Length: 113
Length: 115
Image (cartoon, rainbow over all chains, first blue to last red; front, side, top):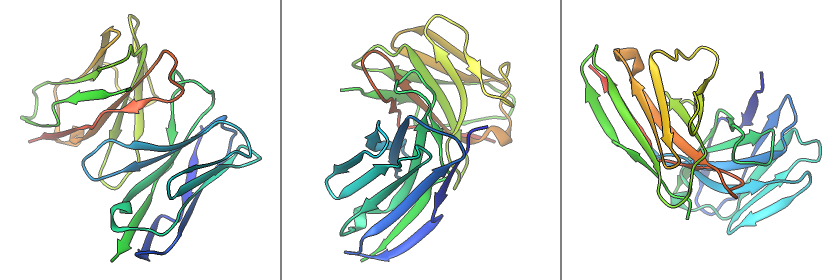
């Protein structure tokens, strides 16, 4: 079945540093999504990508939809303590909210003040 | 816009009892709702997809008789964990989509503890 891999599994960084994490898939997705989850909460959408090669920013976050449609990366610049959490990539086969979303295993980010 | 409310946020029940979790879309019509479960330090695993007015589609390995899903209206879906056992203890999260939305929104989750 469809499977997503995320790396790294966890990261410990100093406040102010930039962060980069990526996501790869064995099959093509037509939508890539990046979510952040805080403990005890549901995931919150950070960035949605709909076209191969697309580069999208949301404040200090930047994500790209890989040209092969089998990968995506998320960068966070100048990290701050509230960036702590689990970051999930997710993919959809179709560009519609009717299609199920497959989640990666997550990257745990810790920011040291 | 696109707010999804999930209730209760936490529930503790005795083994053998049933628990109902509600998922409501507050400001849009959710033709499709999804139910996930998440074990500690793991990712979200899709349990089932429910479309308003029709039977839910369950993922492989998810017992439909144990996890009853009802999506009777465009704003409400419920998940009932029947005859709950300690191994059913988990974080259950719903999400909803539909209409012009390109992506769907998640509820805040329900922490179920079966004792």
